Every structure is written in C-alpha cells, then in structure tokens.
Image (tube, rainbow, N blue to C red; front, side, top):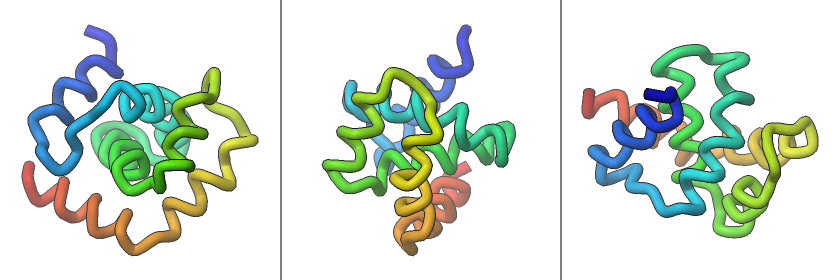
Length: 96
C-alpha cells in the first residue's frame, strides 16, 4: 500500500484526527514537507496534526495546492507555532 493510504487508514482509527476529503488532500500536501524535517511515524503525526489544527481557511489553502511548495511554508509555520499543535501531537502519541 502507498504511505499516504496507510496514513489515512491509521488516522481514521483516531477520532481526534478523523478525516474529510479536504483533510486528506491537505495532508497529502503537508506530509512531504514535514517528512523532510521529521521522518517516519512522528512526521506523519505532525502532518496530521497540522491539518487537524489548521483554521478552515488555512486548511482550504493547503487542500487547494497542487502539491508541496515553498509558498505554503508561511501557512504551515503559522500552524506549527500554535500550542494546539503540540497538544494534538502529545494526545496522538499518547493513543499509541
């Protein structure tokens, strides 16, 4: 199976990170960007939490992107800086 599909299947099991089609598309854009810095399962968790904690307009912007891009870095960095992201990562890791 492809990594994105595995990630999606794994996230569907986590109620805190349940995904819509927009979430899945945004995650597909964010995941490669994050995995450059945080590889493996931890990177998958951070990417999923970015999507889960992004504001609706941020999520829409990520989902509408044709793929990973340096133009999206300000959006990703804004979400990374929020305390909600750290809480999401901690909660998700705690479920494992």
